[in-house]
Length: 445
Ligand code: GDP
Image (cartoon, rainbow, N blue to C red; front, side, top):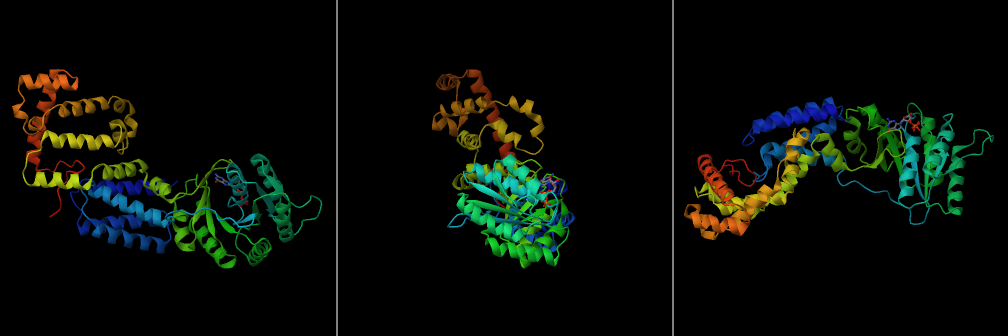
């Protein structure tokens, strides 16, 4: 799912990677490409327009960050905007003050409504509720039977019209089910209603009648993500005709382009509450806008990394370091130690590296990255006096022996560190602090 969109976006971001800072022209070009990528993913036009406008505004106004490079900054903004488009915080089911709570399901035939009823029942049961399923879809041959099978699998009671009693009236079945639930102490009633292949007046009237009979706490509209924007139009019609309080995306396991998922919240004004991701009962999730946005970006781990980098490098430290380097001061062992400690705060080095795009496949090599090495460097520097850290030139033979002794390493390791540090110091001087290490970026002038 979302594969094409993900690929397009990561292509767009990779072009930004080499940039030192973003010009307005860069932002415009990026916004144009993102607009195209969203349109190709079948996202509704008003959603695309609003998205791109916000993106431009925020990218222009973005403060130059010490911790993030321009590509990371744009990724961060796109991610945050995707989260908003998908519904921001997300919402939980609202329950009635007096049980039973009633959840009514609506949607076109084949949207995955009946399957969803079973999944939702299983999910709520696992949370300690006593749900009951109601077969009020008496239109589709076999729908009652299908719900009974699903109910059996979920271990949940199914309320259905008696067989042989004619077709039955879905409205009265729905009404009776509430009474039944009350008597049998079911705290949640999930009502599966009939769908058609397209919207028609009769179906809408039946849905309204059922709604009035059961007075639902939630009316969830199940939308087939594979259908794209058409599905969103159906959701709109239902919102206006019956009133919906939430949306469920189904068939998110297919190769949907993403249009429905990204449009439905904006178009209907209602939150996406759950996602259905397969034919089995357990293929079901509470919908998390932030996780979905990360998946669309295909870089959930990179986002974690960005957050960790921001957290690890405290502002005060970043400012001090930048000022120092811009002022032409020497990068000392003390600074080096501070950087290592900040990086180490982000977790095991191999994990940090494996979160970089493309590094996931290099598991074997990464396994050889040894955190202890960094810890030994930390120990060596900590065994030095402040004077030695400031000016390593004074570290003669006897001081080296003392430091090696104090940090539990060999004199050779102390020598290696000092040599490498001398090289790094030279390089830092040449580059004038433009190392690109987080926390060491030069402020834009
Ligand atoms: P209804 O007519 O809205 O009640 O739809 P159904 O629940 O009967 O689902 C229609 C078809 O879609 C069935 O074959 C289901 O097995 C299948 N289906 C439902 N949800 C999903 C899903 O999330 N992923 C996939 N791949 N198939 C699903």
